[in-house]
Amino acid sequence: MGTYVMSDLHGCYDKYMKMLEKIKFSEDDMLYILGDILDRGPHPVKIVQDLMKRSNVICLAGNHEYMALKCLKFLLMEVTCENLDRLNDQMLGRLINWQQNGSASTVDEFYKLDRAERTEVVQFISEFELCEEISVNGKTYILVHAGLGNFRPDKELWEYGIDDLVWERPDYETPYYSDKYVITGHTPTMAIRANASPGYIYKANHHIAIDCGAGFGGKLGCICLETMEEFYIE
Image (cartoon, rainbow, N blue to C red; front, side, top):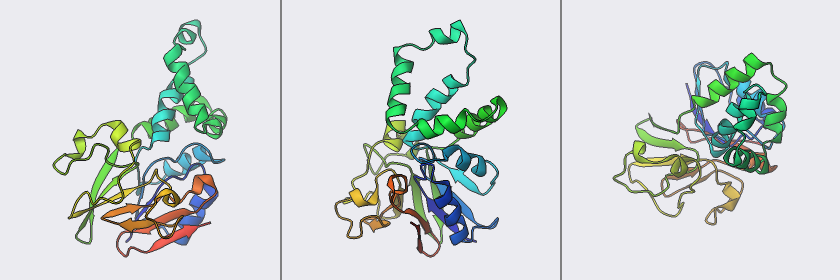
């Protein structure tokens, strides 16, 4: 049995499937995906539909799921005068913001589904957790999409707000805990100044950053927590 973590798939269905094959992912394993499954790449909804069939995968919400949910729930509505009235400046702003952040592929695949399938996809994404704390081989890991914004060592996980968890980037040069490791996506590892191997998983100061830029033409990274072995798909 292995415990695997990956993040920021961004619609890269082929890379995702190749990674599952590479790690020989089986029903005895557990996979955590730290958000940003949606947007940018060609098949985000196709990935979601595959994940919906897997009982041994836990998905956390990223900022792209957070943006998408606000809009997909609106797009589920029937076109009526009453619902069109709900397209106020706030809703329009959300749609524009999401569109500017790569929503086109998600919306395109979403509208190819029938109404029941769309509802199932939205419900599935709505159930994503914001963070998880797990123990593997005696080590404790905090799994979160972006980081622990406004960090304090005495702060409980439930005290962090949504923006702290899905938007705010961590300070990778500062250890947050001496007895826990924080695993994050969101920040491509080529953007971490202290990373001697840009585009590969970054491990330092009890931080493990695993977004290797798959959604921007980079690698999809994955790490096995039992062995710390790293896996990559170009």
